Image: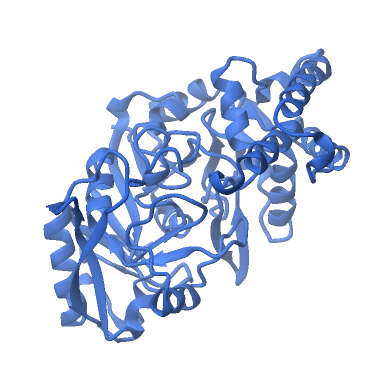
Length: 432
């Protein structure tokens, strides 16, 4: 039976999903992005060259794989063009195997301008947006006035764009004086129009039929999510969230597939926690330990370059993410980063109003929520020499046993370095 497996992040994004998609890709014929936009930054290394993907799925460097951008994604045509040009600098021609759903919405230059205006007007109460125009694009989508990829094929596309631009400029004028906004609309429009020209040359398809034809032909699909569960618009740390459904159920909405096709759900977590932007982060370490993790892990945004806040792993939040996604396979990345620590900690519960709880409260922004930690001996080894998860150092093996018992799900893959082969698998997992 044809199946769709889902791979997504279980924290606040930046979990290292791209590398895991790249590892799993050998078993699939289609890799499909189902939500988010160019605020995503999936980092891959191809022949020693670092490539950051913002729209294009992480199967692009596998010659047998079709890469599909679903209608749940919002697309910045200029960024997409630059991404394609970056891949052109390698030995890969992405165009023949890249397909884009016509129903995906377009990020317009004035969406970015509106994003900047709203964030600047909020001052100290800002959300921490990447200013990529993601939120305003999803807002137009929900308001039923957005432009979609398929609209570029219409004879009146320019007229539609000018109407949207005028509407956005009026909205901006009601938020902030345009002369106070540091935004070069003319330059952004030129970049965007170049991108639209490239987009018109790509393979634009009716995405729902495109995927179902492949499923009916017996092909396997890996649905790739962006951001992380705790940024889900409904189930994340609202209002400090992204504008789409980042959870496994979002793959059905964003690709136009039935839930009956979903089989395995790979949930990716770091061995610790990171977060970019504002919002609640119970285990944040604003101290030397946090800085040590940041420097050792290179914790700076792949898309924005912003330094990430770092802290110990938050198990109540992780257990929540496992629950709402129905995770079948847990993947833990950056385990090697903690190898230099004599001991590591895990948040196993919260203290709030004098009570201990392992459940996430309605609002993590509420005052008085404190993490309760449990300490574990560090493993301190170079982990690349271990063949599989059954032969790990005792301290790491015991730590994994604790996590699996707490989370009620098995860990099937450990990532112990940035390169695509630096993985430790469960003994029963095939090696790519």
